[in-house]
Image (cartoon, rainbow over all chains, first blue to last red; front, side, top):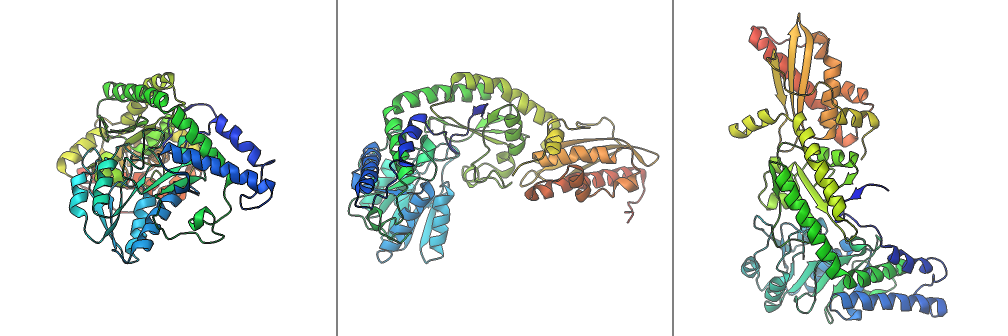
Length: 394
Length: 130
């Protein structure tokens, strides 16, 4: 594929070194980790080695890592698992308004099962106020779940403070770190995290594999029942190739994090400043400073997101509007709504998400293209009519 | 979801686009909250659409269907042009994705309003020719 790939929050290309590490496990080293013979032992050793690497990446112990099919399953296991294992202690869960649907829809499901959920608001930059967690927490609260960093606008949450508040109140703290891992340091002990969800394909690992960190001694009710793999928390023959790939991706992501982050920060800064300087009626969504190194999110007056994405695509640039899940519907994303953006303002959103593989040349090419693309769509748009109806409050 | 080549062609090179000076009628349909906005301008001569232009805030389907609508309406009698419905717009575009069918109704709506505006100015009554 040619062109510039600026949609790395949706997914990333597999690092060739990750692929290389995975390949033998499809063919020669194909064993089932549960088997007693040498083929089984070989596969077992491979996933245990990956477990150590993943654990090390977040300051955890190997036995605290449960491999899953990805971020969504990890979030489900964490939230459903903690809720159903602790319902006798209380039925209250705290989360925030801009969580990924993997968290929000799991919470909605639990509401139907008799749990009650507090959805904390965020400020204009997308930040959860730790004080609001403190105010919402009660004796009934069994779980607080707040993402480490947001997938649409990149806002980094004060998880350490929130985790401490949860711990003090005797509640568990889960964080969806799907976007954050390898883009910022995470330490489950220092950050007061009991449960942490991660996904391989967001940092150059394969799709279909993720992990959940489950703090030692913590009880969860499984979501998937069967042969008792993953300490009974996630039955099913292990996805050995995927787990090996995840391990390699974490290893590389951690080893190269400092360089990669620095590199992405420079490109991010250039894209933000260049876009805001060259286009009027353009605004940056999300937080100025507390923002993932790979995220930029703009809104443009008088144009519509899908038209913008398709126009960029025709020019060889792949980006997204809002999150990948909501780009097929005309509803403004729940994230933009929560940070106070009116529906009509949210229509013209553009998310550019970088990876370590992007270059400054690509940013410069984008900056050459974007003013023309926005200009063309605005030349089609009934700007004067829209201005008038805005004044009318129509 | 993917658009076909014809939709993409009208999206990337829309026909009859832009504001019209001294139109005989103007109509606007849709809203920016949860949908698209299309404005249609018409010039009328002997009850024939002598010229038509559009502006659109919206997705590729809205832009492409407005573009094709103007091509269909141009040169037609008002009564004939009012018969162009979203099915015809969609057919002319060789099909739209199912979730985008709604977007093709805005241009016919805006056109009808432009016709009403034109007739109003002339003190004539709007009668739909069934």
